[in-house]
Image 1: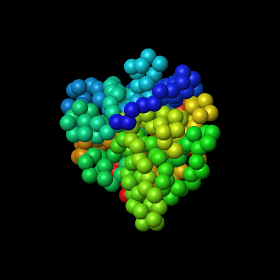
Image 2: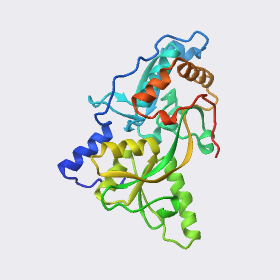
Image 3: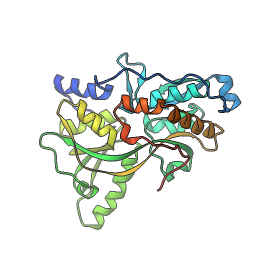
Image 4: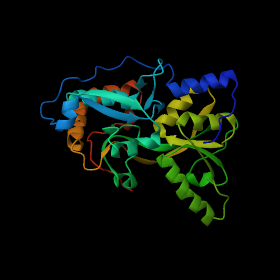
Length: 291
């Protein structure tokens, strides 16, 4: 993909903090480890004893690498541990590139994918989702000298940095057609393997702006040492979903485990740990995409 620019030590250190989740961690909530008796786990998963979870640990506070550089932390990692516990299993959370996770479900490399996946109709064609959170998309720019951006229409003629494989790439592709129809310049879309790469492009001035999920945009702006800011209004609020192979017998047990975590308060504690309570849901659904 696009080469990364050289940064000054100060900028590089700040970006590294944003990529690794920063220093605002609070004590972890008590994770539910006792199995919920009514949840019947498929025999092959039960025999294995572990739930293998694929995630891209470059999306704080949803998922990021811990200080040891090996342990995946964040909202999805904590929820994966709690969900596995409710099913009498241990969670094995593995870092992977974002666009490799859903194909990894098909090849059985992972039992589930938890990486801030927006539940979309296109993705539902190949995987099933159990919803667990809601988020919109937000715009972010360089804090000093960044452009004024309020809506997708303001992207025309701009250099846009995005993480490869995300819903925002699809949004940018759709907006390209709108720009052309209005006789406006095209969007120069740059995609990166991970979110920190897109952040770097904005901070360095290679890109005018970036787009990412609203809780991620807010968190990375907070952790950037004043180098990034969120602008405009979030759009396109949609559910995040836990991805499972299409027709997997684990879908219903996963939904039941989510319901159990919501009911016993574990879910709320985990969201509060990362300051993302605004995205809480009250009832997990299956394949809830509107479009």
